[in-house]
Image 1 (cartoon, one colour):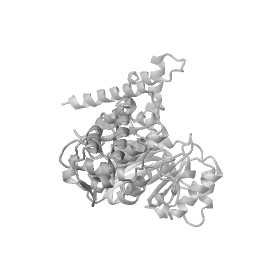
Image 2: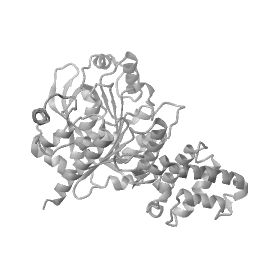
Image 3: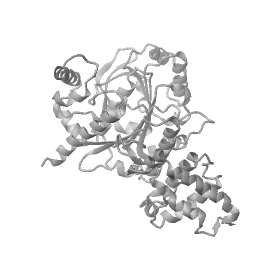
Image 4: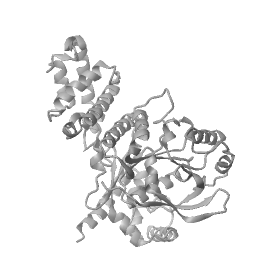
Length: 474
């Protein structure tokens, strides 16, 4: 994977007092190795800034993994290699009374004029589309790519030979998900059921066999091992207890909803983010269709896999990949709350920088975030916030991270007066500049809003078509 030396062109900037500024805020890509935080209420332009950040990273050759909770970021698929109006027709506002042909022409011209202000024309659009490869994964839904969320358990991995510690971490997270679904103790260190299932699964996986749930049920009934640790297996977990666990696993296995979690692409972040055919990969994991508990379980597994992948990379001070988590509210709460996403997120914020992987988290609700976990973030982009309490909470977080001085009155005043689409930016790599104001550039992707399942399928077909056309060029 190539590390990028490029800068990311985020938009126009000016000083807080308005005495200096320019059209091009160039953020060195390596500054994101120390992570970023984006905060802004609905209507602040937060999603637009995230979209621009992802576009710039992909355009600079940096692979990106996007976690999408609200359903907005599959709009990244709607990037077009030209200003031709025809491809825009399926994405027009259905409530627009204008004829589709004329509405598409008008939208195409609006996009041409808006992007021209930022020096982006058809050559730049074609270069971006031709140099990127986008995927959208929808665990539990066939709208995008199905994701086998338990692949660490049910599919043999080469990591058992190349990096057994990483494979063991991924397996432990998958077993925890299964036990949570059964309503049982998922703690890897304290749960006897977790320990036994992990021992049985590792025995199979390390030999290159599958440890799918049906096979584990057989192993519970007829154990292939005599001891667990220093205890006979019947002393560690009695036969009746193993039978009850097997019966619960069977009920889970028979669930039609659960079956969709066991199909599709394997959970392999390293493979996802490996460039192919000269294209930089962008992968969106969208969980907008899942309920809150399912989101936490699935994203906990995804983040554990990201953490295992990161720990297997060589050290680097350059940005080699970017992980963007939009709407992290509820997934990184303060102590004592501990959803499945918190441990891997905290670990990534502490460790990923050493391996050249940047983490960017975003939220519209800053009140319930663990700001101690965010203390490693070097870049803060603060948009319009609704209440005085929100603004005070963010300033407290910045002070706790030593990102502002003791006198924060100017920052508080700026946040109170921000218009939509403007952000206060504090960059720890340029402390002498102090906070500045940022107005993000116009996004190349069409900001269509959340896509229905049918629209997502159509967008994926469109993207596959233009990527196929590029692949067929001599």
